[in-house]
Image (cartoon, rainbow, N blue to C red):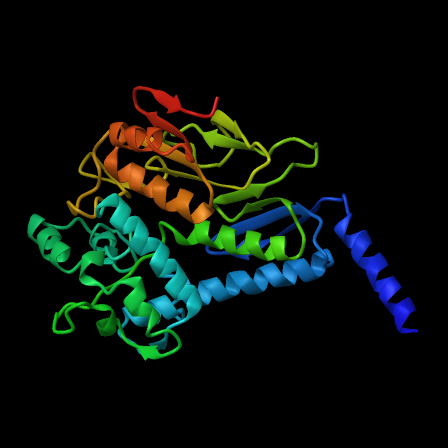
Length: 336
């Protein structure tokens, strides 16, 4: 009887593992819709959907700055929270990117986004003094390292315990917006891979793809034309990147959808963490293709901070990266 049972199980597993049909699941998370196309998972689409929904809820209740009940929001508000592995993992990614960028990428600059009206608290134009005062209370350099944070895993902590100098008056306020969606794509992709899927496209605002599309070709991702008024992704395409069948994170950051105008002047949502002011260079969008979506997400933001020339120089010195940079004067890419 056991032998028959094992044979049936093996047959079922073989059928699932060899499933050539592509499935599409979708839902709502992180302020927008998400969708996943995949094949080869060892679970039914309903169960895969339930698994993805569960993961995205977990991320929302850990890393979201918009969900007031999240671990991040409660930590920023001064509450005591239990430090989770998910939070530690994203903090470590963010910290390493802060080091690599020499502060151009900085998740500890949350107060700057607030005073410029792109955060969670206000919508007003700050004075020069307000910017300088805010800068004093920002920066990952004020915080403990990931190795130090690891000793706090599973324990109750407050924001003060993240400070290197525990006597500092201003508590840190973190904002993971520039990396969390890419990280979410990686988490979902890892879940699908564990289920046996190798061909997939995960779209949660940012993108992770691997393997082939239903036509047996690499996944093609459109790069939007970064012009004011182009508010619908895919409506006006400037360029197209096609994957080689490998695993890639694909993220575009730009200043053409999130901005506001005051007294005739346009203020970008990209804030320079080192200056405290919105960027003023001519780079309109940066699309990055990296080995992971969290890397692509963080790098795209970093490049929007440093501008066209510095971003191009960095990309050219890192052969694992592909990118498309579009300025007001030219388009440069290294994938064709």
